[in-house]
Length: 306
Image 1 (spheres, helix red, strand yellow):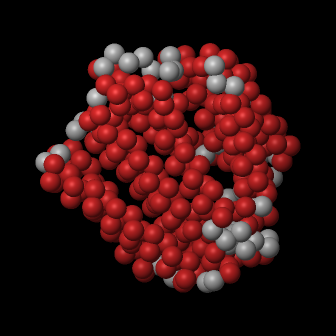
Image 2 (cartoon, one colour):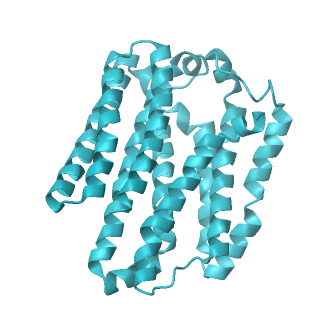
Image 3 (cartoon, helix red, strand yellow):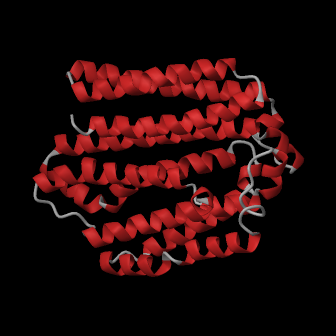
């Protein structure tokens, strides 16, 4: 159980479900309908999932290794240095970093894409830079995390880029439908995670300040950082409302239900953010936003039945 907490098991489940829905429910059906062969076989897709999970889990483990003092200052339940030794956590991180190398080499050879190996190494480097330096800077670390989450959403599309080009030539309407869903959920993922990262920085302001961080709430104030998060939340709300209205015009029932499913809890979150003044409020808001992202995945699943 302790190791599952260290690996952020619920987050990994969200990652797997997101990749599954985007790939199996959004991208593959129109390809199969037009007899276009996907780039990834079943085995290669499983290799891709394994690599993605290792990268994500490794990032979470290294974050806990680096944040021991900060988490102590913020009165968070420590895993590394308390329930798991620093050495075991470091070995776990190294294993999660090295384990995907052979699957990645296999994937690059089977797909004839040696550049994928460099992308993998670049992701590892970005996660290391984030934990060591970038998360201590105002907004930069937040944007990096949000961008990586958005990248995870559109990664299945990028892997099937050649097949998608064939689909565009065969059926522009089906291609447009896939693009609209992938772009919409990528934008949703970026904004939702960016907002949550800002809220987490507000929650952790005392420990981050003691550790020499220069996050947005530290260089401005809790109130101004929360205002920035609220502005982004309103922008997300406008985006979802606009998309839902366009679905009304097209009489797309599944998309209308999906939009409503996102709008109602988002309004609740904005109200809660407006009322938040203390660290405990932002602690709760951080969990609410994680749940909201799960709601987003359910909404995406509803959308695929359109």
